[in-house]
Length: 331
Image (cartoon, rainbow, N blue to C red; front, side, top):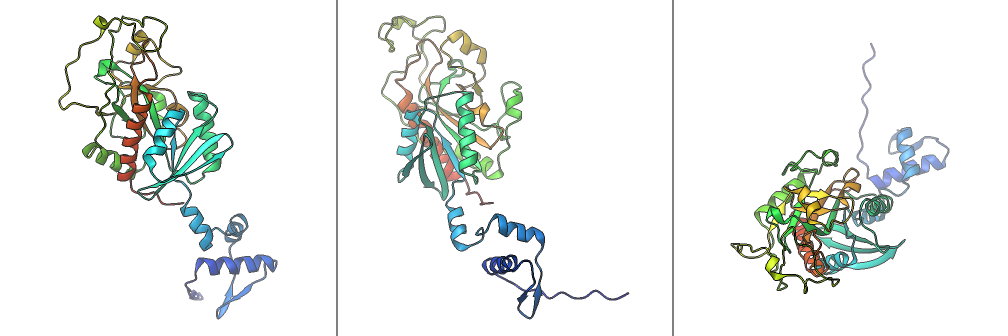
């Protein structure tokens, strides 16, 4: 048997290799000289050059490094404004009906997205998902940051923040939710960041607006959106927290199909911390972390007084999470 022939190996830079393959393609597949011998390229390599003609050029690599790997979704404008304020130095543009703000947080290239056509729920989430997948191909994580309705029976108060990651093993669902188990699993860096967030949480602000929780069987009185006409005797008396101030809860977010303004409907979700509407439309496509500031109690007294503050609280927690999160590698 004839002994195997030894093949000499040669280190070559990607740019040089790409140039040689392009030259071979331009010369209709004829072999080109390479050093002391000849080199024939595999068809798969030629196809890569055809499909990605500048993929490994220095300029292309620099552009890809600047592509967002984290998308921050803000369905409401008040949530988007809070996100932009929390980012610090940003660059804002507009694209196909979306407000786009780019920022760098802890070496993460983050894109904050808000759809100008007002919409909430599954339909809006599907629109966000389609737009993000087609516009930012390098995305590795979605942050769904904004407000939610609190489940008061779970000792949740206005200004608290609920963090939920259905693709993480850090917390289980209060009930068996099929859609949660179909969620795209998150990477180890996300799990580690969530663990570090729990051990080193940010200090949340305390708002001077009175937190009014009414008895579950007392409905809102009057046509005004505030509760100036409601009976103060129907307020629930709660023991002060020790230490005082908002807290961060983990897990227990229940997606709903429409806005809940009824305490009787809210009580169907005992065991959860928060109600929200967008996550089921996003969870199966990209790993997702949900961060919701509590702005109401999902009852007939629901109004917008706490939306701005709750949005800022959620943004503060999301920024802290990103600072714990190790940057993703571009693929």
